[in-house]
Length: 466
Image (cartoon, rainbow, N blue to C red; front, side, top):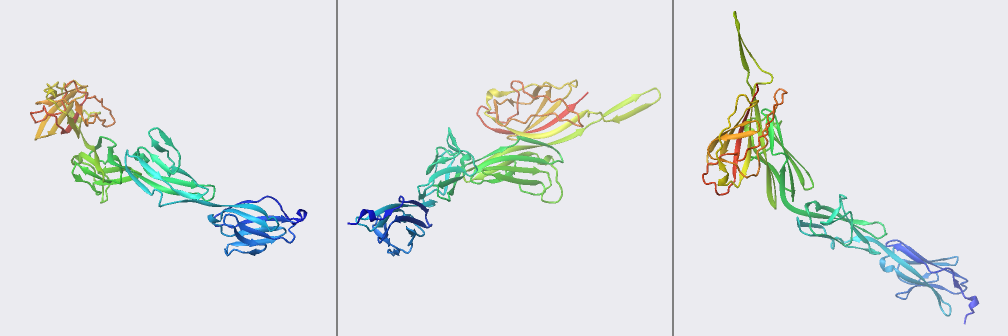
């Protein structure tokens, strides 16, 4: 038996070494007073002898050994996760002496494209689930964020800036939830990795007009604006009176822009088109313009009324008589004594009942009134029917046959304003109807059944000042 006073001894404790996969690792065993004994390195789990003294025993070319100044170092080149585990430094004493070292091989995170979500498409209001699967050593943590840094809506009450876990579940995906999401995997071993997952929220188009009506003077240019929302990407276009499709040219200029699922549509009528020169609007351009958005799920449109204003001015004639001469002069009165504005507009009546029919006698219009409004209505349903209306101050009445005062107007006429001319602002009567005020005349005698009728108004406004 060997004298214990002559035995070698280990200097220090066994090491714990961490190395990233693909890098080299070194385990060092320090021995004092080795004498004629030898140091060997073994793999504990397989009991494989790797080296004895300065010689490599294993046939693994990635294993090496070095010796110097009481230190024996096991070299493992380009370590792989399988190289992780316990290694033993052993001295061939009797009994044998050994010291255990631990090698931990860490692996940067890696996201599996095959097991993770690529793109997801859901209808608006349906649940959506995004999955991200990652590997690595240690096991990576997963975090979800929106690429645009907006909050994530998990349900009606939960909004988060980020979400942790393999699954990102949304109970009801609204259109604002569509877009790119980032799954970020990290485990402390650089580099962290991320995967971009696209969520498509599909919904029917919606279209809104910026204004119900646009008024422009004859010879000018009118800009009509609409906004639309749709996904998948819609087809956007304009029509006139619901059937004539419009295109860029000398009369029309059409532009569109988009941001995500939101679109802006602009139609300029009477501006400078792609042809030569400028073509201002005329009364022939008045009408109902529609902006349309169509996609695979459906279609929608909004209507804008283009109203063309024309202005005429009359003059006064004054005659002065003296004992010797008679002088006649004709001069304009400032402000103009009479200004006539002409326009058109559309609206729709809903649910017209027999109880709503009534004839209203004319209130007339006195020359003493500060202004007089003449309102001529042209109705296109089963032929043309004319109704003449007059207004005085805040009152409005009509002369004609059976007249309707619908309880509901789905698209009420735009307010009729009295415009300014030559810098003079005229009083603006509020044309609030009396009870039963008619909006139009319907040729169909059987009005007890509900129906919809579109009425076209041709309006002439005449202002008379004293």
